[in-house]
Image 1 (cartoon, rainbow, N blue to C red):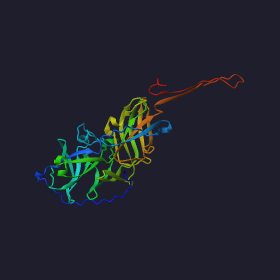
Image 2 (cartoon, rainbow, N blue to C red):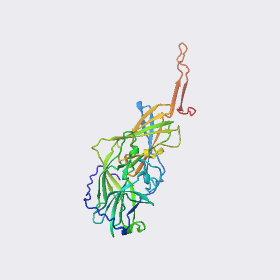
Image 3 (cartoon, one colour):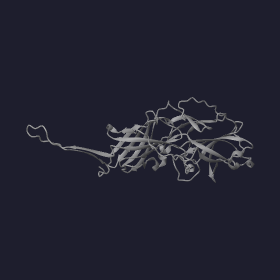
Image 4 (cartoon, rainbow, N blue to C red):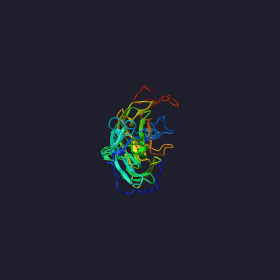
Length: 388
């Protein structure tokens, strides 16, 4: 799983001439099909035991945080769908969410056959290089290293120092979680994935030259839902005190990621504007993040420590609340690559108004020491006073 602060030294692939066999069309074109490890998760959502109490200003307002964890097993296949931003990649949205991926290929002699080439032409269910067809070398096995997306929001994915060690079958890279000036950080964060396949033309699907690539997710997804909560609008959510930069070694054969966080850089805050309207609801679940899946945070795997979440909301009576609490809950102390962490929020004090009335004045007879008074104590649903 995650190995933090590990010292992993790579033997970077030496630069050499790129073998271009484009003239050997008789050997067939190299094309790609894509999928992800496993199928869509069918695990039931289960929220953790003890919720975290999130205190507002003066300790009066509270919000409760519950968690669930599920593997990010979305099948990464070519599909349609509307253009998307930083959404978790699924079966139906790979083409729209990624649009392209990068491939480096190394031959049996350790020479570069493809050097971080963009693969962005999709037709007939397969993908081809963007800058022209590549063709299989005769009787050779190639090691293919891929990552997706190749570019995001019209910019090359910020992978610094991408290096392949074909002997160790590893890829090393650095990554910084994107932020924005307008507080829409989650929308700017892609679901970064890597894949590896050793293949010859005779080993491809139907010996047709199509290389099957199985992608693994390098980041941790963080999403939010609401449970028992008063009618309100979720204005924004901020993840605070987290590392946003790091280096990673992808073990291609195991499909695992070992992250080393850039602890010399200050911790960061990541904010996403929502403005999602929630109904006054005592049972069931309401979506926050999934009203627009692009608002899913895609974060570096890391130990949570003292990291917090801050939720700003406005109740239907116009009162604005800012509530904070720790992201670490019970046994959930870290985010791991390839998992989606769902935080369910529920409230208490903003849901209910509490009444405690006592008779203001008591008249005692001269020389008396006792008298009658009345106490009325109850609570009612703030947004629905008939619920009492």
